[in-house]
Amino acid sequence: SPLDCASLASVTVAAGCLPKCCHLTVTRCRTTAESLLDCANLATLTLADDNMTGTAQGSLELNDLNRLAVIHVGQRACTCVERLELRGCPRGASRLGIPSLREFAVGAGSFANTSMLSLTCGCHQTVSHADLPALASFRVEDKAFSNTSLAVFCTPASLASLTDPLTQLAEFSVGQHCFTNTTLLLPMSTPHASASRAEFPSVTSFVIGDHSFEHFASFLVRELRALKTIHIGKHCFRNGSFTVDSADSLTEIAIEEQSFERPDKVLIQGDCSQRR
Image 1 (cartoon, rainbow, N blue to C red):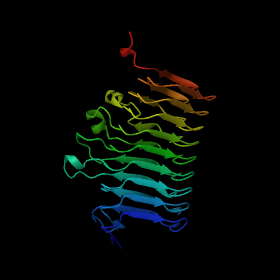
Image 2: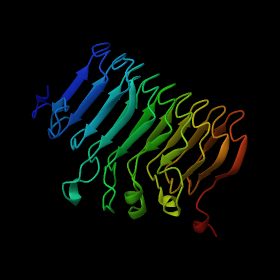
Image 3: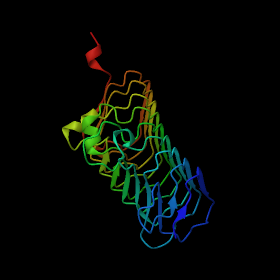
């Protein structure tokens, strides 16, 4: 049955405590009988190793948690989760998006069978605030999200109306064999012209491990004023296009063997408009 935990600030589930749990919903307001927690003040959620590893198809939903700042998932966890959804529910313009989330870290082998990762405001209308205005660190270790086909960090509506949807993102690190089957990642994919607005002014490094984003169709980021290093492992971005624009501080690029094997376009450049 649901638990009423309005004052709860942190949830930690130790290794192997919920091995057979298939469905977990954490929500600010109790909206359905399946809501496990009612916790408006939750700031930290930690699921340690080997939780949610049952055989049934499951889900992990985190809804309308305006104070949630940190999500840590250990190794080999959430392997039964078919979809991971973190949504902010609209309660007026000032509360669109997921305003407090600053760190998202997933250990090796977790979410291995997850087909969809969605970190958005859950609103399909034009919005005036970013989906993830505080997100500073996105870290995924080896073989996590290995079968994810769709990953969304920013809704098309907010992407079209915002110049810089992820202004605080400073670290983007993906291990080996992650997002191998992902074909669409918003806002870094460009299915529409508006996606060219994807800007990341605080990112200092992009690290992509071997065989990650192997079948990715399109990767475009711009306004990377703080970017210093790009490290792309083996067998990454083998098809499609890869564009990094306005990277004026870039000091190091490392691309390993058989990446960009059959690309449509590979472009890494500074801001030409500022040069004379």
